[in-house]
Length: 535
Image (cartoon, rainbow, N blue to C red; front, side):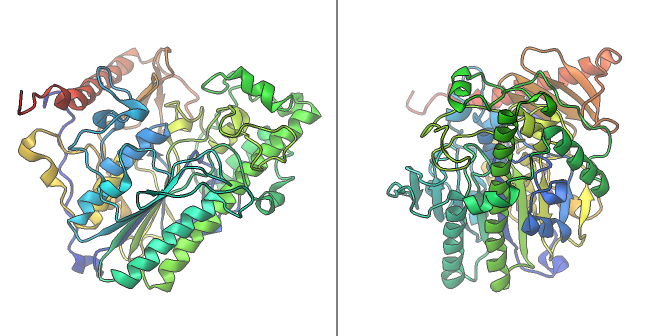
């Protein structure tokens, strides 16, 4: 099995605390859901995100940071440091896996590792992992399992105990509630455990569908998107060019690419204003334009609110004198979604867009805008599905201010980065060398000015969509399609397919993809065939 596994990478040891001039840092990881590459102001958006923009202004923005293309595999990779297939949290042939997969016993989560260094850990928001947060290293948890009702969730838990369902019109809104619970956990920490560092995992539901937002948050954006997605795409690209974000060509709207899953009955419920292709805005009728513009207004409102609520976390850290020595990461679990479906409480066509009685999805037109300048969407392994923002902020440990970092990184890198920054050793989980160290690499050298690549190769597979990146070269294919080849140094938006011109390069990269796939599968199923002691 060892021959099939990735080369074993030793994690870099953290610099002594005296070099940084601070004690062990607190760590905050903030994860958005279905946020696109260009959905923050600091990545080219028109949406008001002053708190996150401020984080970027005083920290770092990564321009080539990757996820797994989907919610649950990204969360597994983020908290374990392994690719989701390695820990059975995405599909593996011959093993119970995917969204309902159970991790191997050795695939422990980051809070369990940090506990050995004296950390207390807190979770608030979405989970979408196997197991209970309270049994996997978290000292406090608010688990909001009902992601389909922003105003009245039915299923949520505090510290493992189920809470009553929230009534409609109670004033509850998930984005605010998630932050309020996190603030309570931190206040308790400062009162009772001030001598210990903490880890906070804040997992927003926004801006995942259903698009639901407070009326006062929607109002400022009510007329913003009547210009249409074709104009909005160009405007975001112009702002990115001014910021120096992902230079190069802009991917054109793929007019024939719709949602990844076909739910024709949803189109009937949503009415004549809905369209499932990003056709030219000029070809839409008045009803369609109004409906589509309203959807994007709600999406913007959800992001605006997420930024404002997240700002409350920042304010608390400042009030308690923890701002300078708290390492904060902000990222998204995948690119924006082209999905169109109706579920949970359904959709009332007469309801105000964004209200509790509506169930709207962004769809491929606005998802393309959200993922500017890239192609495709959530679930695809093209850049639009897998490349999203990463902001890193740590005044005591990152001396750069407002700079960009173009070195490729991946969510598997967060565990080794955090272990590196906190001087925490993970080696005890690789007993006897039976399990290879995680493939992630610490990003901490990039916090300085180290331009060296962290990875020999990065790998993707989700629902048949697959990719591999080695250096500036990337092969990518949608399910059932042949490999495409791109040089991302010259063509970040994947506009010039070089596969026919460079077939040897395609074969070489495809062979590497296959070797890694076999290694991941071997690791995932190894313990399933191990005889029990009683056998």
